[in-house]
Image 1 (spheres, protein in one colour):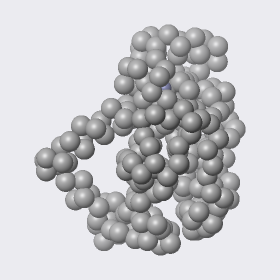
Image 2 (cartoon, rainbow, N blue to C red; image 1 turned 90 degrees about the vertical axis):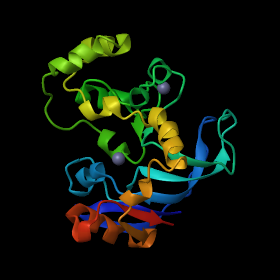
Image 3 (cartoon, protein in one colour; image 1 turned 120 degrees about the vertical axis):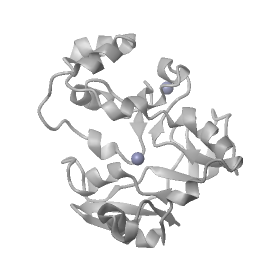
Image 4 (tube, protein in one colour; image 1 turned 135 degrees about the horizontal axis):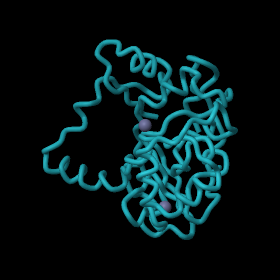
Length: 229
Ligand SMILES: [Zn+2]
Ligand SMILES: [Zn+2]
């Protein structure tokens, strides 16, 4: 498949990488119909994450059509059109059951690496594997608010004790897209919300580097660049 790759600081390219495969019975494969830029991509592009490696795939804001599902998938089927929040959630753990999807306990591929860095692991995030390759940076004290919030979550307290955790990733505790997207879609269907107004620039995926550059520098009033395959 074609994809946007990070090849170095401020150096993006569109390249062919291996097609995805169903590795877990809960997996689904999506044919991306539209993707967009995100401010958090800029941290990766700017080289603020020292564990990035040449060839890392970028992009975690997308929608499209399901083309394959694992044996345990029941909520979506081939042909469904879906919007995908950037945080991956299992729907079954304590956090998912309480609508705290970005704190999902089961979808992060390298919990043991992220946990000491952030204080508590988040859910997995699409195309953020590089951030978790290995620890980087010096630990910082846990913020008081993080401690207060962790009191709500028994699993988190246990982990904090075990790891002398360092800092809570504040933004990650409120990115519960799975809770909001259905309501937002209803508003959009009723015409009360016009998400398309955020789309200021459209590109083919092949022009991804140009689109990201415009987004980064807010050229021509670029609010969001979107890409079609
Ligand atoms: Zn994002
Ligand atoms: Zn979960």
